[in-house]
Length: 140
Image (cartoon, rainbow, N blue to C red; front, side, top):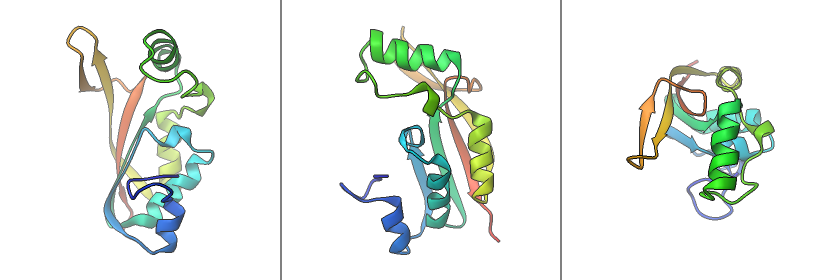
């Protein structure tokens, strides 16, 4: 799993190096890894006590399939075809459970919406397509 420390840096490497961060951001990543629950555990190991974990991903819903794979990949070609696999999308409930099992407690969740008329993104309460979760590492 590559993160913002340069090519080839993995969460596992950072855990081995005993790195710690007050905030971890995994944006549009978790749906691309083979073991999302293991990624959550690695993120926990990298997070200071009471630190923040922020994860954004795509919901496994029919609207997300239509928006992300059909529209963004096939019709609009914003992303290369085959970038996403619907079966790898993660529901908000699944993400919350994975994070809870890693001792990260989700405090807030929000959705993202794109307005094609203004070409702008906004934050929304609708988590049916793209969403972001904010959690805190249990201090124990």
